[in-house]
Amino acid sequence: MKIWTIAINTFTSFLHSKVIAVTGLLFALPVAMGISSVLIFRGKPELMGSMLHDLSATLQFMSALGSLIAGFAAADAISAEMKSGTVLAVMARPLERWQFLAGKYFGVLLLMLAYTIAMLGTGVFLYRLAGLPFHTPWWVLISYPFVRYAVWASIAMLLVTFLHPFVTMAVVAVIISVVTVLASPAAANYSAWIRVPLHVTLPLTTNVLSEDRFFSMTQASLHRYPWAFHATALAYGLNYALVCFLLAALVFHRRSLVRG
Image 1 (cartoon, rainbow, N blue to C red):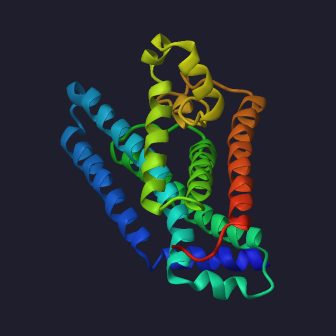
Image 2: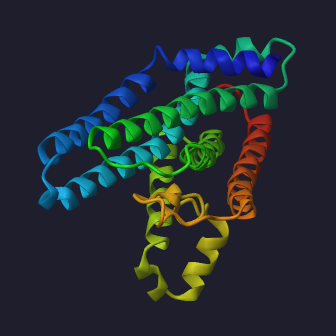
């Protein structure tokens, strides 16, 4: 109950903070671009390829943006309490430090769940507006990005327990960039002593927790993956997030609650 109360309070505070303002602004930009592309290219078969490219780019941008928002929200949820000193008042109650951290983490997850649902709704709206089919199961387009965001939020929460929030976001951005590069075909040309350690230590969110593999314009080309495949991929992400959170709880338990 204590954890859930903190989670709800954290989520509510996001709705009145700079996090939601930045999220709304950055979310609106690709949506506006996607709508513009549909209105320009709709009804023109010769330009169908351009419209599909723009819609794909719009959804990919929103998906990538969510990773940064998850990291920013997690870092802000902890650093704001530390900076204002309210964490001392909260911890003066009969509350364990891991419970405080868990409440903050679940509050971030509530925010990212809302973001994921909004992203799914936007994708369906754009494709319906364009008169295009949408065959990918809705649970895939919610569970995969949500677990991916849970990973980035846990990494940011771990880092912010001992780093400045701006440094935390810089590190998260670098990790996201490295993971993206590792998923590209060019990564095969890198030396094994570089690729193997990175593959072992970094979250493979791009090639394991990517919903793009299941997105299809036609029912015929929609590849059916067994439940064991989805369970393994999602379990990998949840396990990575849990490990990072437990490390964050360990560091947070040992650190001073006063910055400076």
